[in-house]
Amino acid sequence: MLFTFNILATLNLGPIPVSAADYPSVYVDPESTIDPGLTPGDNYTVSIMTDYTGSDITAYQFTLSFNPTVLNGINLTNGDIIDFGLHYFNPGTFDNVAGTLSLTGAFFFLAGDVAPGPGTLANVTFEVVGTGKSDITLGNFTKLIGWNATTSLEYDIVNAGTMPDNIGHGSFNNVPPIHDVAVIALDVQSGAVVGDIVPINVTVANEGAFNESVTLTVSYDSTNISTTTFSLNTGSYEQFSINWNTTGVVEGNYTIEANATIPDVDADLTDNTDTKPIEVRIVHDVAVTALVVQSEAVVGDVVPINVTVTNVGHFEENVTLTVSYIRGGPNPVTESEDTANFTLSSGASELTSFNWSTASLDTKYPYTVNATATIDQTDENPSDNTVTTLITLVLGHDVAVTALVVQSEAVVGDIVPISVTVANGGAFNESVITLTVSYDSTNISTTTFSLNSGLSETVSFDWNTTDVDPGSRFVKAKAVIDGDTNTDNNEDTKVVFVSLPRGSVAGIVTDASTEDPIVGANVTVNGSSDITDAVGHYNITDLPVGTYTVTVSAEGYESSSDTITVTAGETTSFNVALTPVQPPNILPYVGGAAIAIIIVTAIAIYLLKVRKPT
Image (cartoon, rainbow, N blue to C red; front, side, top):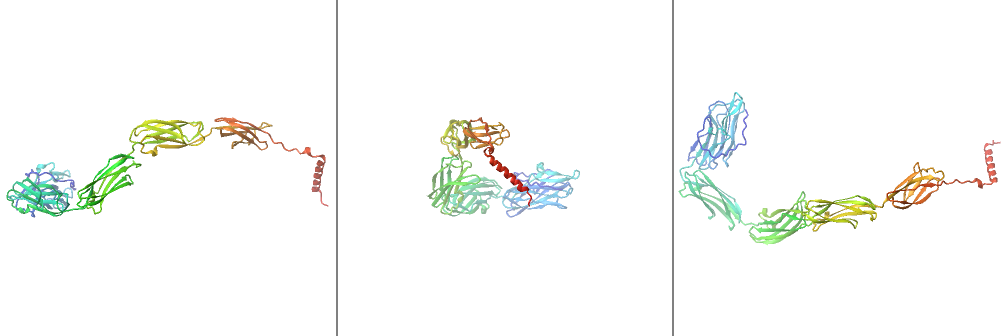
């Protein structure tokens, strides 16, 4: 059998009156103890019992609560029911501040192992630590668990959560029949600085047998701090928190005393008073007591920063005040600093004003304004030397040209469309935005319009390039408003190459005598050329408008040149017929004698080649 303890179980039920429990029960024995002879230092033991007479007990668990000013838990032992065979005892933990015992219990490891009742489940031993009353209360997680042999399952014989009448609680009372109050706790820090508010905590208990009217007096070295009168029932206690203002107290060592008195004769005056020592001293200490700065500013504003420094120490100090302006983000950067130097006597304050210029600062991240005061001496409380605050910078008036769309090439005379997008990235609605589009220094168009914060507007223009000189022209769009705090994004520029209009020349080159096409003729116009194809055709394109000389040449033909005019967007037709070159005719210029010499010479050469040697 495995028995799981509920580790979440806690016990702080209110006091439950002790009463006899119904059968079967789990109860505290003895049910009630009244013994003034049990004084602090004595031990007191109770047993957690069951009156169950069945023979199927397999586990138990319980929690307890008690008055920690009277009893403190010191020991737990297993009882005589689950104490044989393979079993396990799990002692809980005492919390003697809260007055609780965490979940405690025992169980058999093997399913079906059982023990008979009645008997003792566990023994709980307390140390008596005070005089008074204490309920010893079993908690809602208290159970006596049995084993059902028929179903082979555990079941609850007693369950405090569902069977509260089957639980018997206990009580303890060691109050003697006397009048007796006691200061049972005095808590105060061991050191303070002149001017501090020092908390003093006092607990008074009624350890007598009568309800009392108690007067509590708290003092330092016989000087009263506080006097309180209250009622306190027998066996109970009262806690007080008193604030001691040390302003005006002279530096030195003092004794804090708490004294409780009653009108009747107190049977034990030795516990009516408690004392604690405390040192009150003077220190070097300045503090930034105020940093005043607006939470939001427009970029370009001059932001006023007001810092108050107070000398909360006891010496005159030379103070250096540094105000830093730190840009946030993943890589913080200190943009700038301001400093001031002054002297402050003890208790005095100084208000210093700075003007922070936010011109050209980034709005992407917030800024931290950091004010730090330092002194020549060692400041004994540096935790109050620095104060920081956040400020967000926003754009004030800001328009930007976010897009300029224009083609990269044009021909003189074209109408070129231009599109410009303007965005209002500032915090204000703009009623007059002037948008100018120009090329080089020449205006193309100017228009004005309004634009609300956060919106964009696209404006279109037509650029007539009729009178534009050919070449690279710089087209610029610029948006202007009054008071723009960020002029870096107001314009955009694109380059457009403007060229002269173009035309073409085409035609056929033929033989002037035969009218047959000439293949491979070279045609040249204004540095451009083409070679005629199989049908004598040529075509020269992309020629600037104008008048040019066309030169045509081919092997075996006389070259030809002529003037043509190229028209924009058209092909000029120009056909050329080349005249063939005539070969030289030498026979008409040779006489008859010359011919005879040539013939004789040829015969002689032949005879020399074929004649046999002699």
